[in-house]
Length: 139
Image (cartoon, rainbow, N blue to C red):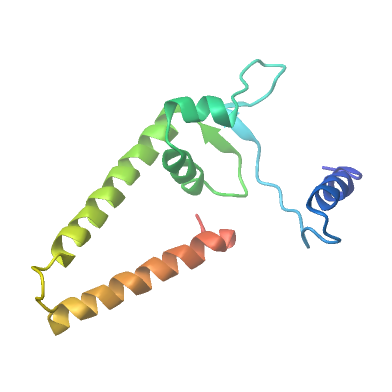
């Protein structure tokens, strides 16, 4: 987008947040597509976040967008949501298994092997969190 788009966004955001500097850089992702067509009010294929949340969870929407390249057009479609739901089930199942195997009867200590697994899980959790915070590291 061309001037004054970013200046306008910055001025509005800085006034609202009462900060002199809101961000250092603006980075635009590709256009959002609905079932393969660019989302547009004129095409009447416009969907709001509230409308999407009426059908899908916030986690499913986040996964759908995380599974798409940030610098390309993003597609909101039944197929993209279905793929996100599959990944969500895998993650939930994996985390459920971890939680199950981490349960111990009251007072029973973890073995050295279990402690190492806990450390690995914590390290993976931190690495995933860091990658998500750094959107250049997402697909």
